[in-house]
Length: 187
Image (cartoon, rainbow, N blue to C red):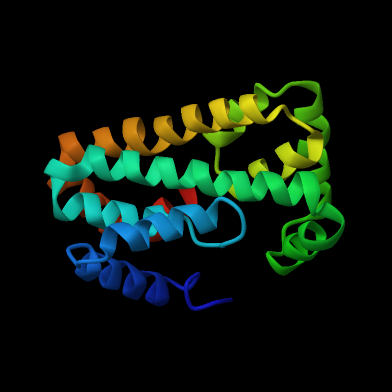
């Protein structure tokens, strides 16, 4: 088990992110996390987004929109991996991330039948990188992929997390810290 997956490591990462959330480059670090997670990085951007939102609730919606934008931009790379580089980078990446190949194949098959599933999958605990790669592999029209990705990432980051932090700030922070491991798995 990696340090990030261990409760102690996750709490340390959370504390580090909370401390860095006011840093000069925090917004760009969040952009990098959101971009990378959408195509190849195993840690979701929520690990940085939530502490940043909790540190300054007035900026919660701007941060959420920033995160959603960069997640969708990173989704383009994931889409390209599935559409153009599946036989080389795609299969290798899925192996490195320990994502079952049959899970990607199942999504590819389902997405080729209905691109609307991107919206449904984008709101579930299925890692977004699987959604992006499977969408490219399935040949989902790029415009639809971008539209549905923008909808789901906005719903997740702006509506769900933004409203949660905006309206329940202190309580949301207490709950997040109490149930940190569960919250990170859920998001």
